[in-house]
Image 1: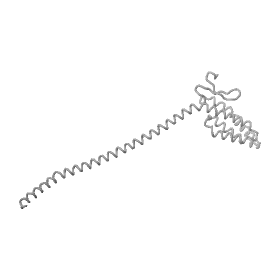
Image 2: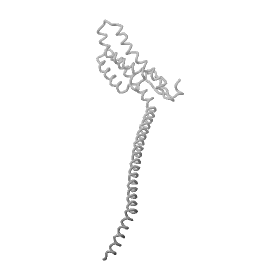
Image 3: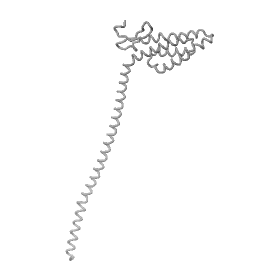
Length: 207
């Protein structure tokens, strides 16, 4: 190869390198940067979407939970509306029977056992009683618990009398409570029979 040919080849190579440097490399780098930016944008967009989706799912789960709680509450309330009138009537009947037991044990050795029985029953059933019946019943068996001590004291006859009345008055309060509208079903009424028992009757039979 002579010097002329070498010079022509060198010039051609330099021109080729210059063209690559001027056009191809900048275009390549620009496209590379564009692709990199696009990937970063996609990553950010994807992250934002996932964040929104996560927040949405959390909110959705919260709404589902709240809805389930409300449904359970309505279900329990509806069940209570169906069960409550007869269950509360039963509770007042049981309270009345225990009150009669209080009276019969007033001067007997069974008094303490009756007080304990009344207390256990009250702890399990007090919410089915009306407010006045709850108070009257709890006061009555509390009065029964101390009545013998008051009798033995003999220095406070008025206290003995008041204590006795707290026991005896509970019965009428319990009976009156089941006749309140709040304890009567819309189509039934609670009445006291001649024998002292309490029964539920239809409106046409309630006179």
